[in-house]
Amino acid sequence: GAVVSQHPSRVICKSGTSVKIECRSLDFQATTMFWYRQFPKQSLMLMATSNEGSKATYEQGVEKDKFLINHASLTLSTLTVTSAHPEDSSFYICSARPPGTGLEKLFFGSGTQLSVL
Amino acid sequence: KQEVTQIPAALSVPEGENLVLNCSFTDSAIYNLQWFRQDPGKGLTSLLLIQSSQREQTSGRLNASLDKSSGRSTLYIAASQPGDSATYLCAIGSWGKLQFGAGTQVVVTP
Image 1 (cartoon, rainbow over the protein chains, first blue to last red):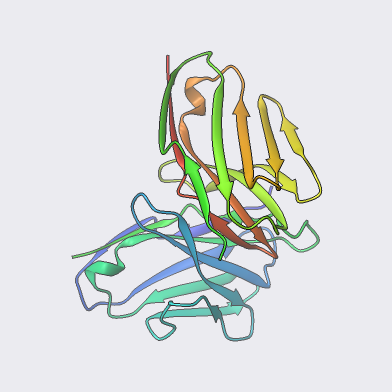
Image 2: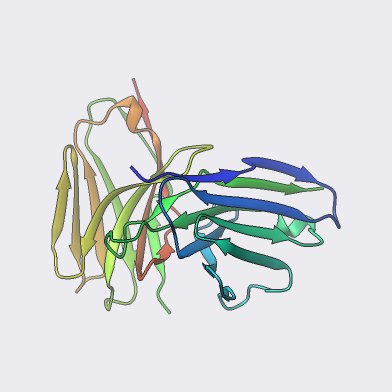
């Protein structure tokens, strides 16, 4: 089956630093990837839709200058949390859809737990 | 705005007992509804997908129903096993965008 790899699985950083999270589709090309965020005991919330070769589409309330998304190739999307603060501590997870599959056949990465001190 | 609610937030059952997980949504104009399983440190695994025109889907010990008129979906897991312990999420969406409930954390005790 399709595999989506996400790294790192866990990161701890100091306040003010930037953190990059990678999402790779290992055995298929993904023109579109999705980034979600989950705070403790809350729902997964869609942050943005990452489109290969074009700008990402951000959901309402998500700061595009803080959460930089780059989808430079058909197999890699990156999310950079710039100048991270403790309130950015959360679980971040990406998903992708193999071409030719059903519209809702999404595969998820294993997620990244970000802790900002 | 669509709101997705899952009750209960947590559930503990002895092995062998049937599990009933509930999901409710406020806007009946949905494209589809999915149930996922989330394990600690791992990604989400899709369990069942019900299209808006369908009433239920089955896979092995899992059965999910959908009632759009009442804004509800129920996931049944028959003869639960300790390996079924996980967090179960329901999600509504279309075109890859999903709106999730907060999940039900299930513990099946041997």
